[in-house]
Length: 112
Image (cartoon, rainbow, N blue to C red; front, side, top):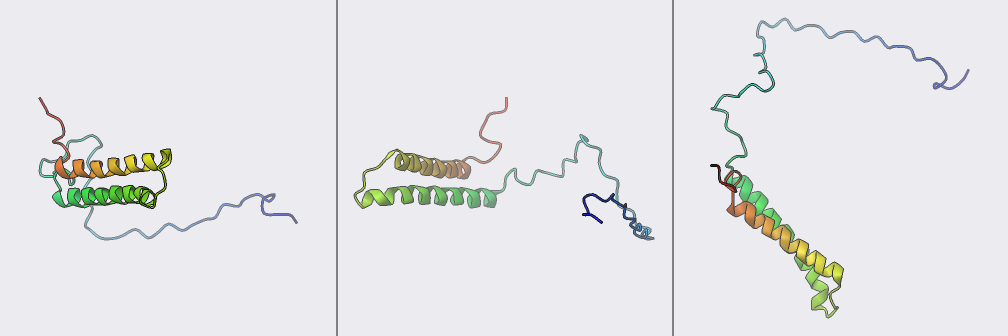
């Protein structure tokens, strides 16, 4: 008698799955660090729709954060440090969206 914690564990035997008899074998995987073929361009290197979607989303999120912070000020409440910080963060998020829209990945710096 006793709990399951005090009793020794018994290993459970699991049968191995049957081996497939198909004659088609998968191609070997490339070694880590091996160069990939030039035909395989990075997917997110120049994706205009990805930049538009993420940039517009960040501009919208920044606008919303700024609008929520601005709403009490329109009702006559004086802005406190938290409200000012929230407005700055909202503007920063919106500016980040503008940067993503205007400057695609890989073109932000010059390669000499």
